[in-house]
Image (cartoon, rainbow, N blue to C red; front, side, top):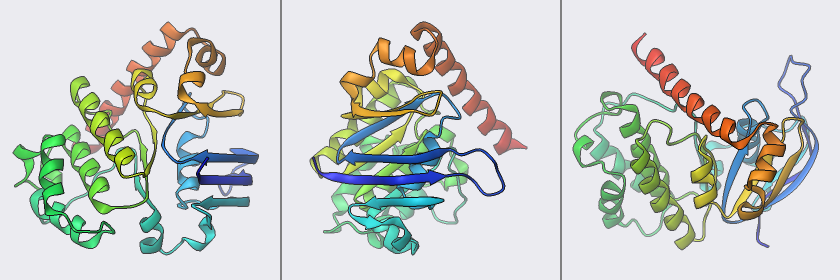
Length: 263
């Protein structure tokens, strides 16, 4: 197994809090496509931030492709290894999305600088209608598809995504995930992501991290961990209620985004 991310006796708690998120956690994650699945509040986003070097452990070590994340605090050096798509990520720009696609390719780590890839990503993520707009002028779903295109253009070895597709329509989510997973597999890169959609996690993942409500984390093949029995044990609710809960959560994410954008 190619070791991509290693947690070595990691303990983590946020400053000025009493709650320990992870306590002496040791895990080795393989290269490939891994989904993080579990109830809200079980540490999925924090796990990704630690794995990306954006947070450092309270104690213990995290390694990315053999490098201690404490040595990856320079942003440019870190992004050579890991790019991170945050939940509800948004930003304002003076340039058009068309221009930004070229800027990302030119300033990123991808070699060679293949201009044809830009056109492939425009088609794959259905960006033709927004190319002459700025990022603050497009819908949330359009912005999410734009950010996904940026992440693939940039050329980091590992991509981490926290709820990157919640604002897209159902068929768009499937097309986006189909393209991303084929792309990273062909390029022998890794993808780690959260998404409140078990069907997507089951369809597009090689591996899964299953976060139990009591702090226990299981790691293994997605085909083994993302079964009804395992999911119901981790979430402690029947699968039918879990899927209802997922739909409510996706609606809440969209609602929160709209309130934030227009207030």
